[in-house]
Length: 265
Image 1 (tube, helix red, strand yellow):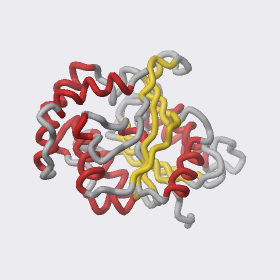
Image 2 (cartoon, rainbow, N blue to C red; image 1 turned 90 degrees about the horizontal axis):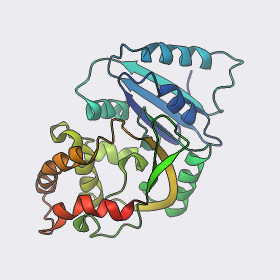
Image 3 (cartoon, rainbow, N blue to C red; image 1 turned 60 degrees about the horizontal axis):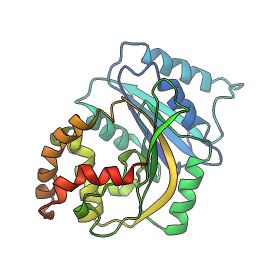
Image 4 (cartoon, one colour; image 1 turned 30 degrees about the vertical axis):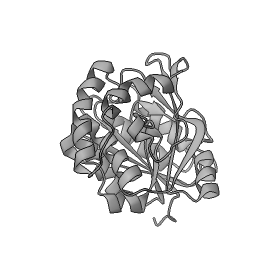
C-alpha cells in the first residue's frame, strides 16, 4: 500500500526490551492529528521482543483495531547490528518522513499531542531542527517524575559553555541527516554529542526550542547509565571537537557535566 509522505519518522532502537516496548509503541501510535511512520530497529532480541512486534503488526492489520490513530504507519526489522548508533543509522536510512525523531525503547511520549506541538513549532519557526525538555521518570512507576531537564535557549556559544540539549528531544530534518552523515560509530556513547556538535556548530542548521516536555525517559535505561559512565564518555568529547575542526574553551569539557546540573530541576 502506498502512503503519503509522513511529516515525522520516529526511529526506535531496541534489544531485549520486552518489558517497556509496548508502552513506547502505543505512545507513538496514539499521537493525534499527525502523520507519522514508526520504524523499530531490533538487534536480534530473544526475550519476547519479536513476539511483541509481530503481535503489534498483526493487530494493526485488523480493520477493527483501535490501537492507532489515522496517519500512523508501522515498520520493523530485526537483525544483528554494531550497537545503538548503527541501529539508529539504519532506521534513519529507511525513513521517509520530513523530520526524524529518535525514541528509545524504554522512553515514551507523555501525552497524545506531543508531535502536533512539535510540528506547530517547526512550522511557525521554519527551523530545520527542534529540541525540547525531558523528564526522567521512575522505571517501575513511570508516572513519578524524578527530575526534569530544562534545555533553555540556544546561542552560538552555548556548547562552548558546556550546554547541550537532551538528545532524545531532537527532531531533525531528514535532508540534514543525509547531508551530515548520521552518527559516527567510533565515538561510542558520545556519538550523540559528536553529532550535535556537528549539526549545530559545523552545519549551523536553523534551530528552534520548544519549551515543553516532549520525552519521558525511564531511569536506568540505555540512555542513562549514571554519572560514572558520563564522565567516561567525556574522554571522547575533546575528540568530537577536534574531528569537526572546532576549538572549545579551555574549561568547556570540564564544565559540561556541571552545566547539566543547572539544567536539572
